[in-house]
Image (cartoon, rainbow, N blue to C red; front, top):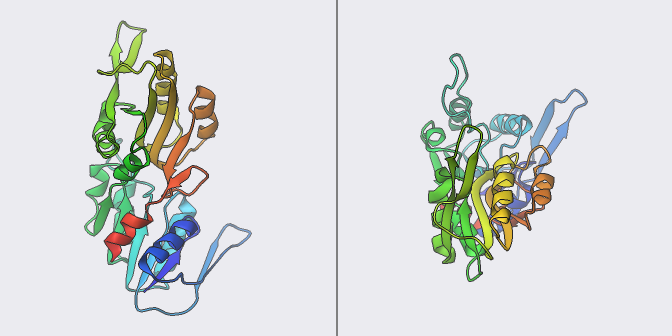
Amino acid sequence: MKVVPCPSSPLLAKRIAEELGTTLTTVNYKKFPDGELYVRVDGKSDEYIVVGSINSSDDLAVLLLLSDVLEDVKLVVPYMGYARQDKVFIEGESVSIRALAKLLESWASEIITVNIHSKEAESHFRKLKNLDAMPLIGERYSNKDVVMVSPDRGSLERVKVAAEVSGCEYDYLEKTRIDATTVEIKPKEMDVEGKNVVIVDDIISTGGTVVEATKKLMQLGAKSVEAACVHAVLADFAAIKLFCAGIRDIIATDTVEGVFSKISVAGIIAKNLR
């Protein structure tokens, strides 16, 4: 058994290989001047574990090319891109995650991901294990003087998991319309004045929701505000927007590798691969 690292997840692939007590397969990747990709895998193994998040269309193309080379594959896609298009919103649309599921499951014997976008997205797969990294975020804040807040009610259950592991209080931000032009945003029950607040969510993409939440929490007297998430996509200069809004730090896992990847999901992935 060997681990095949994709360009999107080299460090996580190395960490998973170390957890499993195996090695990385040497893979050669190249991009031609016209944008086409090239893949060559060196050596042979009885079983391969391919590790690669889908952060871009190039990452998807890499998996497609690897599928032409490798057989008997377990596929680890820590961040499952295309999962937000999980149903038809406008007639004639492609359900992107359904198309992706068909492609990946035609190749891999098993697929592992972490905190896929929705249950609707998960429902399009037959061979998927959807792992939860929220307990890891909870462990990060264990025995720290913080309270956790979900930016909306929809993410409350995720925050509850992290908060119960860390042993801290939790709440969610509720929007109340006062009149035609005024919307009040505040925690449902908690008073955040003088407290260290951690906004917890599964994905931070453009950061707009977290920026809005941060400004409101600071107005309500929060001592400090951090953001913690599983997938730090941070598109469109989101990190700058967050810091300018007053965020003290951004804590994320290595499903999307970057400077804020301070928690590794390698352990929970390796546990499910053994």
